[in-house]
Amino acid sequence: MRNADAPSPWKAYRESIGDRSPLFAEIASVWGVADALYPGSYVDLSPSSAIRSVTYVDTDRRAVGYFRDSDRVQADLADAASSMGHVVEFIGSDYTKPLPLSDDRFDLLISLYAGPVWDSCRRYVKPDGLLLANTSHGDASIAALDPDLQLIAAVHHRAGRYRLDTQDLHTYLVPKVGDAANAERIRDSGRGIAYTRSAYAYVFRRLSRRGSVQP
Picture 1 (cartoon, rainbow, N blue to C red):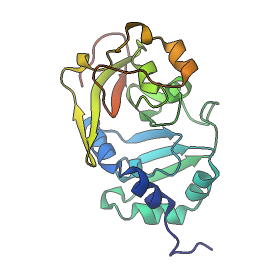
Picture 2 (picture 1 turned 180 degrees about the vertical axis):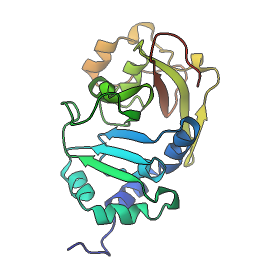
Picture 3 (picture 1 turned 180 degrees about the horizontal axis):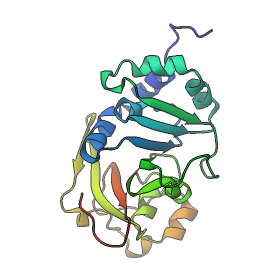
Picture 4 (picture 1 turned 45 degrees about the vertical axis):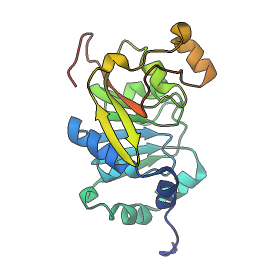
């Protein structure tokens, strides 16, 4: 039986990394995101504070144990009034292998500090769906080179606040070193490259067909 007084793994994790809930609230509000996939989530429940249905994927035993305790998860979500009735699903698998999910299902794919998420999970994103990625393991750097993706916002994070920048996007993702923008080298290194103007993360849209899209 679960100890109701035991500390919440998500709340402890949130205290160590900061609360990402405002970021997902902003993304959900601006683009109407209702269904998200979060590979390499660990115990970060923050997307579910704003997004109606979120599928989390991880092999970490602590994440498996946390999401298995549905009472704990729902109790944690109860702290966010806007999350009432939200659906939380968890898959205890390696996201680099095929997942039991339909193609073209999700409005948003989340890649934060988790490795090559876009390479492995792009198939699950709807046409015109979104990718939120940072450069920690090179995912945003790889996404920036993919002709099937278009940058639609840069995310800035300062003093616990998140801000979406949709202006002058051509000034982002410009490599400091001209020949650094090589997808295979980025994959081999497992690291993002340095840019002349950086951000906390980036939002890309998966193009349903070649051509420009509006943010």
